[in-house]
Amino acid sequence: MTACAITVDDEHGTAAQYADTAAIPPRSRSQLAALADAVTASTARRVPAGGGAQRVAGAVNASYAEFLAAKVQRAETRGPVVADSDVHPFLHRWQRDIVRWAVRTGCAAIWADTGLGKTVMQLEWARLSGRRTLILAPLAVCHQTVREGAKLGLAPRYLRQDDGQPGIAVTNYEISDHFDAGAFDAVVLDESSVIKDVTTKTRDRLIAQFAGTPRKLDCSATPAPNDLAELANHAEFLGVSTRREMLSTYFVHDQDGWRVKGHARGPMFRWMASWALAIRRPSDLGYPDGQYELPALDIRSDLLEVDVVPDGQLFATDLGGVGGRARVRRATMAARCARAVDLITSDPDEPWIAWCGLNDEAREIARAVPGAVNVEGSWSPEDKAAAFLGFADGSVRVLVTKPSIAAMGLNWQHCARMTFVGLGDSYESYYQAIRRCWRYGQSRPVVVHVVLSELEAQIAVNVRRKESEAARLTDALISEMRAADTWRAA
Image 1: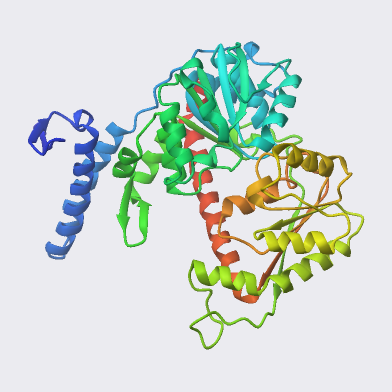
Image 2: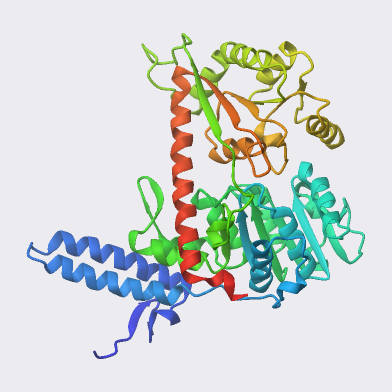
């Protein structure tokens, strides 16, 4: 076949020729990708039946597949090679292998499910990746990280201002701007879904602040990012791709929003596998699961008949928009709180967590349940930490709070009972809240009550849909990761 140059508009709008797709700049690549999709659709409409459209479309898709093959390169490795003996023997073999891969990759993401030792892995990565490493975490997790360091013979320090000393510094996201990123060789984002929302100031600040940091690690207990915004933000923070380049390469926008192009799904996951690792259990990496077996999870839906009709409806058929949901949640609050109180007080020998979405819900349950402690967002960091510690050591039997306050990073395996006093649309909040108790190390079945009015059952359906999509994404990433075997390249 005769070689043929590719002509597309360059970034200034001027026609330019390139010898192959690998030489095309990112902005022009997006034009080529869009052109391929447009030609495929247009040809299928105009060419008569008989196979012509399929042949032309197949040729265009083959060309685009070549473009994707050229685009999908392994993320550049930026870290040193470390031997197994360099990693602390406290870690299991599979944990040491993950650390070695992440250190060698340099800028990497570890999406390790709850209870798999994410904290000790990130601490070892921090030790091996730089003379000075900064770990950013939610405030409630910072002191837990410091305690975990002692298991490895490390002395990480929780700081509110940089002390200039070598080693591992730990601070919370809210005060990351107290630290000069240029003074650190490496940075870790613990519970890195903090950069999930593309519109948040936190996301913009962190990406800009650490753009020049040589080595970076994203850690999340959510098995894998379950939406486009979070995935793009992880890639941009790590410096493996800009949001615009990732969208133009692997996604198409239609009336339903952004979605992965059918022929781009495989290449996208192969690309992701060069810089991200997802693990739900050791067998995902070919190791025996051993002690990593989860107990049973019993989720019980408590649907209440509540006579509420949203504005503009003759009969209650739909929640409506955001405003409608908020009004229904307030109108059903008394019934939901009463049911939650009944559940907690009828099981008085068990520790309980009541997850609330409204301050009034939390205050009502704390008022009605003797000895319950309601941790609110307005509390000082020290008071929150004391309450969480009290719940962990058994001096507090019933903890009442919001997922936004306590659903990330805290370990409460002693508790096997919880109730959601209503539900929001965030799958991640729901998942993380459950995993505070349903995690490796839990010895009993965990019972979760989701208390909703019948009208609010639509929210539960939406959360289950997001759960299924997250599971599919995780399965695909793990499959490509194992097929490519990139994580063993360390």
